[in-house]
Image 1: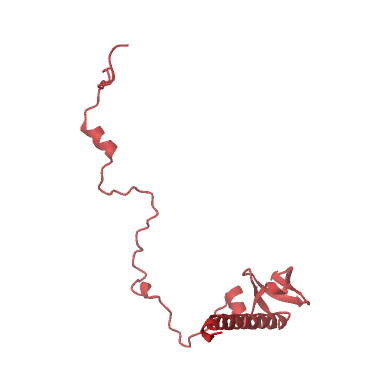
Image 2 (image 1 turned 90 degrees about the horizontal axis):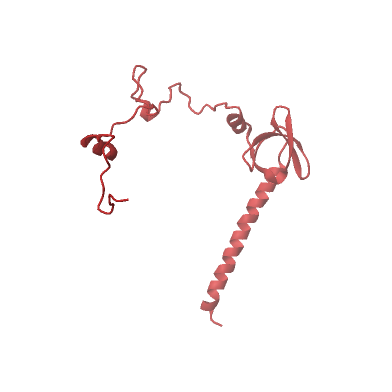
Length: 163
């Protein structure tokens, strides 16, 4: 048998081995993270809910999702164990001081505005917008004279006056 014919199979087996190895590493790291949870730790579930760990059991955890509100969750539903600073920043809105100076941060698009500048016109008002176009129905109605009510309607070629 030639080595060239076996090469695609060798590459395929090697790729499968590497993929399963990395997946097992991720699963092991997630299991370690879940096993290191302690009461009082802030977590995020896989559904995106933030809570505080109250009790840790073998396969489940008791979470405080709001003050006085507790719920049991499977350990597998814990997506991330958060650092205290990150949990407080997300849940309680406490900011982390990243800059040492006291200069205010102003976005680039707002740097030219002052307090006396007028805001841009609000597009949410209900006034009609004139685009300079005439409506097709109003063109024909205004160009022709109104017909009298007692006048007979005009007949087309296909209609006859006899009944």
